[in-house]
Amino acid sequence: MGSENKEVGNRAFKKTITVLLLVLFTLHLIAPCLVVSQEDNIVLRVGIYENPPKIFTDEDGIATGIFPVLMEHIAEREGWEIEYVHGSFSQGLERLRNGEIEVMQDVAWSKDREEIYAFNQETVFPDWGRLYSRPGVDVQTFLDLEGKRIAVMEEGIYNIGPEGIRAMTADFGINATFFEYPSYRDVFEALDAGDADVGAVNRFFGQRFENEYGVDRTPILFTPISIRFAFDRNDPESEDRIARIDHHLIEMKADSDSIYYRAIDEFIGERGEREAVEIFPGWAKYLMFIVVGGIVFLFGTNLVLKKKVDLRTAELRDDIRKRKSVEKDLREHRENLEDTVEKRTKELQGSLEELKTFTYSVSHDLRAPVRAMKGFSGILLEESGDKLDDTGKEYLERINAATHNMDKLMSDLLRYGRLTHEKMEVKRVPLRRSVDDVISEFSDEIESMGAKVKTNGKFPDVIANEMILKQCISNLLENALKFVEDEKVPEVEIRSIMMNGDVRLEVGDNGIGIAKEYHDKIFEVFERLHGREVYSGTGVGLAVVRKGIERMGGKVGVDSEPGKGSMFWIRLPMAEVGR
Image (cartoon, rainbow, N blue to C red; front, side, top):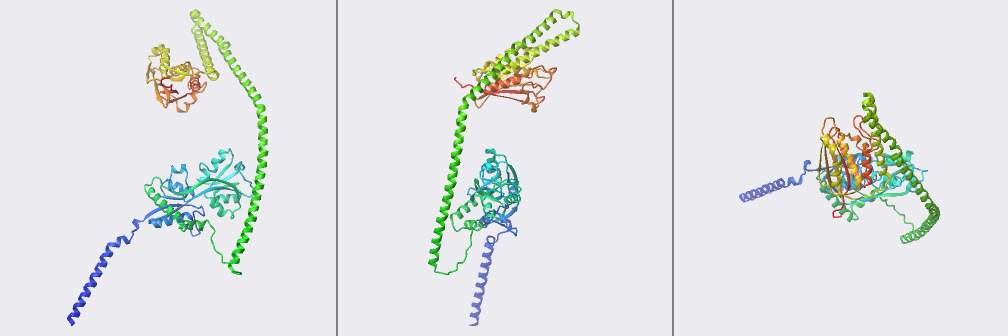
């Protein structure tokens, strides 16, 4: 009997040991699943700023508001650890751009911002801006903002957004002065202190704090927006986080009892229960509520309707008065319009006639004596030059050169004047023929200088005035041959490039080049970068080129650097193929 008891005890002991070993082995297998190391935690750096009730820190410095509640709920579901980074709104956006945080809460979506940040797709909730004024400042419409000091939040969508207060005042042509503050609370404080006349805040902040500051609510609402989470666009993990946050937002919005709606009720709604004292039967209390409520509703509705009718009547009277005033102005304007047009037309025709008379005077009365001086000085040099000493010859040569320059200057000015006021006809012009004709005209000068002039390209037909086009090409080729360093052989390349239905004709050289700050200035009348003693010219040639090309519907420009030559170009519409 003793041996049997001993054997039973041994079997029980072995079973106990086996069970303990199995338990230890099982714990060893599942331990990694039960314990999460600090290294496996996903830490999200999340931006927070002061914009109650949507997002703010309480008296203990703890993040709270609608967005932190939602963010922490989602983080708990996803196993994320939140590390809040506090600052102003503009600081938060800058940190997000620089990759110092991964998420920024309570950010309004816009096309401009989407180019900088990544956004989740699901709107947390819509919002819009409202204007408040300091007491005593009457603001009913945007036109009342003229001359006002407007307080706005730095980087806020109601400040710098495409439909923000700055853009809207600019669209209306309203002159206002803007002052930027770190938060909407600072905006209200500026109004309260009299440092600003008007302030722009979001509707939630305004509803929550308008009674705590000396501010008046205006009827002006603007810029409806979508409030979302913003993410670091350069972070490869952002796409995953956006998908998870959108998933949870959609799920929470579908459940009317979710933390999404509880957070909105807590921070925006007015919750609270009051105990009622039963002094008469419950049904009588409800009946009284219904009757009194009905009376109040009818009375209130009557007041509202009466106010709306009075307001609408006043608006209609004002509209009728304005309309009558406008109709009167239109009648008077219509009666005077024909006389005004006729008078202005005669004045314009008179100005044109005066300009033509001046052009004729320059062409004949002024050029005649200049040419006479040039001719007689030339005759004196030829026939009596041997009778003059060296000084006399030098004087006559200077007179001859001066009259030559004066005659060329007047020719250029006349040409410029005609381009300004005369009618210009454009048609299909063979560009190749125009280029070849100009090069042919310079053949003697090219040969005497030993210059090299080559062409490159197809030179398609263009829409232009052939005579003016040749003059423009001639002026550009003349400059290319002229403005080269001493003892340097001019090398000129004329080529064509087709660009989006236009033809760009380029005249490149190996000349002295032009500094960038003079690239626009040289196309103005009388603009010269060098004196006549260095390079001859009137200072009008390039002005003629620009005026002529622009009159033909084209453009002109130059690419150049000092010492590296210049490449002048003109751009004209290409003629359609087959026409």
